[in-house]
Amino acid sequence: FINYFLYFTLDRTWSDEIYQPSSFLAVHLGDTATLECFFSKDERYISWFKQTAAEKPHIIAFTEKYLEPVFYNEFNTSKRFKIQRRDRSNHLMISKTEHSDSAVYYCGRMKDFIMLFGTGTFLSVKVIKVQCVILFHLYQSALPHPVPVLATNTNLDSSHIVRNRSSQEGSRQTRA
Image (cartoon, rainbow, N blue to C red; front, side, top):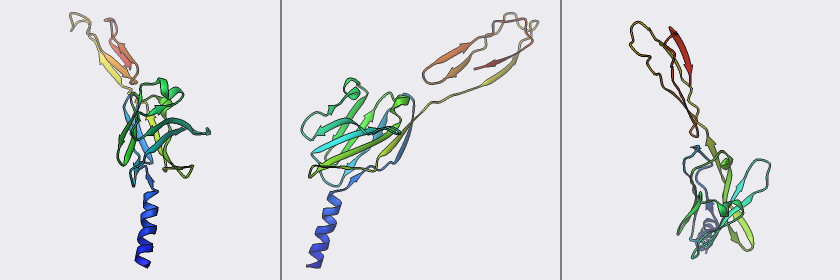
């Protein structure tokens, strides 16, 4: 009797579990982020929520096992949000990440009219900044034509090209 009760209790607890394995996920601006959510058993109704600092959670999507996901509000008009469903998983994929995607994302399921949540995954969208300092010397007498110097400043969303067109300077510093 005790073994049966213990097995039933453990099995019951396990069946209620929602597991978001990553509490933190960092991606670069423009990359695709996959927020994972696993369940101990096959779930029929799953929802995803986004919560930014000092804000209430906002529903992103509701999924029903046999139907296409329903996206809400601004997530309905964006083609960047997709749901990948399997028997025991439901992952939210965000393509072309933007800085405004940085938030905590929760997956949840309904049980007895109560929403049960995973522990959440904090998504951090990072901006890469590359700064280079290039020193060069141009010697008018040694070169028949000015040498173009190309430097790129990449912020993933912009690019700036700097060329040295001056043949009169002996030394120039270019910041990119």
